[in-house]
Image (cartoon, rainbow, N blue to C red; front, top):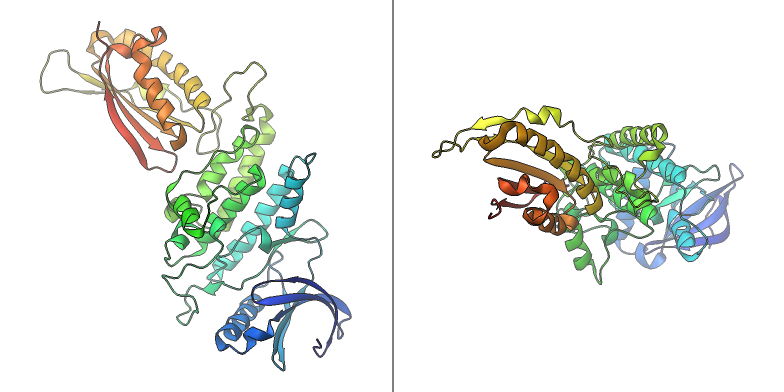
Length: 419
């Protein structure tokens, strides 16, 4: 194969639409990666238009973490574009190396921070230009020799305002393991879909696997749409709040732009550096780890402000005043929930002693990971048999369990234990 102005040296890889070669751009005597559309596809105007559209999109974007395009052209039936040669390999290969090497403990968290920061910056820039990548995944994240990362392959990206886009609403486009819920539903998307995909990449870097898998695209899609975000390993649990915000099912609940991710990541890093003991790893004694709340803090909500409860009169009964005690906590695993609940119940017990028989009901709200909701419910139902919770077992408790994504799990009532 010959392309005027370039000396082809070797093949770097192949994709569904194109092959990529290492070449010398003769006018500048520099190495480039030259992407050439497969000749069997060139006869189809649809594929040619898509290839040209990708080249034009990438040529419009000038950002240190988006691969730059140097040249676009056609020679005979060959469509090509020349890009910077990114020599450090793909994130997909690094993750594969970590999985295959038993002595490898996975990507260093400092490296993960660099990757997320770089790609979030690239997505923020693309979003400002109303361009959605729609295929953010480890294959499309590459490393320069200096360790910085670059976002590749805008082959299925499109401008938000492009009325002539080749992929329209109702068409599922992307890689199922990394696609947002709205992509799986075939809905139109914006830059927040790319941030969801970045969250999936983050989960895979931390856990060594994607959050959802299945036998086919449909089964994977159902999980992205309806299943809760899996928990990270305990030693990585301090990343869970960031992950939860990135992978919220509802785009309105996600970070709204890449810079928001960078700000949250800096806060997470600063908090970890200031309080190394706040790691979610259990202590040697087996004690429950500190709770990590949605805002990234390890300090639980101050209960003092919650003790100023509201007295509500019921329709009947002289002693039927209700003191609404809004217990609110967040937990990603059951040990966190149990340890925090013990502290809260002691506060409630002391408050109950002061109020005495006037307390007829307590309202309890817990935001928990949906996967532990069953154990939380069983635990609360057994309060009547727990001596440490004798006070709680003597009053009516309205339970409201809410998922970490803000969606209701279950509401029910615990009646006083029979004496």
